[in-house]
Length: 56
Image (cartoon, rainbow, N blue to C red; front, side):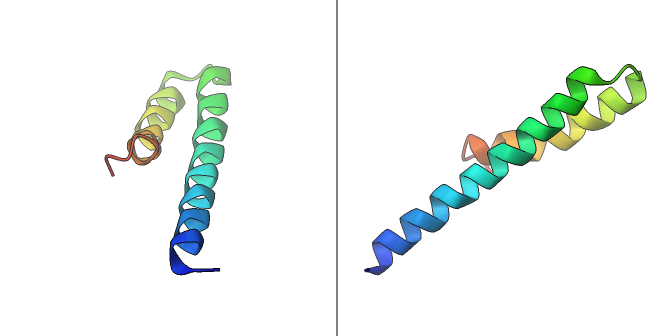
């Protein structure tokens, strides 16, 4: 297995893990009734969204 394939696998796993945590935060964001928690979840989502969009 050459380095390009390993790099590709690590990249795919990185984005899958990032998407998992992003979806977990979105689920909490949608289900919360407290406006302060909703704002907090929105702030937490920003880095995950940027990573998924590859803007880091």
